[in-house]
Image 1 (cartoon, helix red, strand yellow):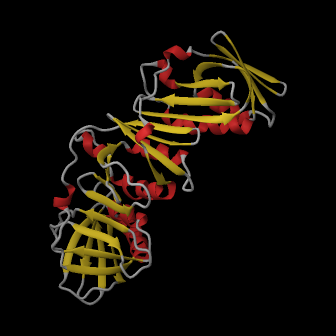
Image 2 (tube, helix red, strand yellow):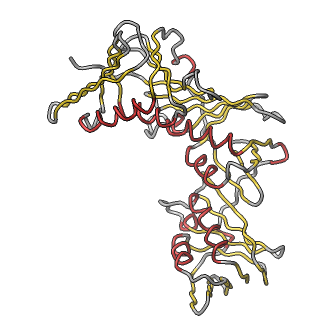
Image 3 (tube, one colour):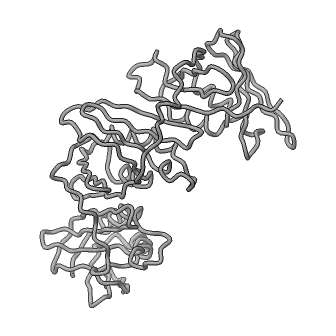
Length: 372
């Protein structure tokens, strides 16, 4: 293998696949990046941790085809420090020689034969989705996944694909985020799949909002591609819980709240709130006032009133303020509609319908027991 590539293209290529390099593994090859030089004038870089696999291409002047895997971390650090000169790479056995300007380096590698093959995903039955739509779905839902290992299915994002619409849902049992979008153009293949958030983060990182992304589903894998860039992910197996049954349909009390005002108040309350529970009391008063209160025995207490649009009966509800803040930061628009029924029932938060281009987006938050 022998080729010349710009420092910028090499740096971008390595950075693009680093998200799929295994950080903790007993297989040394999974800590490597595979470099393949193609006579058609490009170099392909690939990485995998066996769950998420990524490959990208970069233009290069290829004098001899070939392939070699090298430890990912050191080349990334090295390329970052190289001067602004073309980078020449040449293999001699299992060693990669790198020359840039007057500097030269030799890195020990491993043969391509030991590198795992990528999943066989059939793009012959693929469909396309606009990058902007996929970015929005990922951003608005993946934050709500569970990080506990007791229920692995909740460690993923449910992606429901239909003929003219698609939906993403994520929950950890205490909070839930659900977003629907309509599909224009060719319909997707109907399916319900559960995708690890790490894979979705890699998709969002690799593809821009302006890209038209090709998506394919084969067996227990999902593939995404655009141009020379590809991401493959293993899907999480098992039935996803029936989330629809936990979304309340009879929340009859509605408050319209300025989102930024509520965010600011919750952040102030958070200074005094418990680091363990973040418990904050929200008292919806019948005179267009929301009273926020926090009491932490070993620290102190905090109280604040903010104006809202609410004229129902007084209801006191306890929430984990960190969860509520996270939801509010993912909702767009100036106002949110906060619907609830009783202190022990789940509340829903949606973008206010009074805005323009309001997305079909709903978040649910379970309450915390208030301490008298």
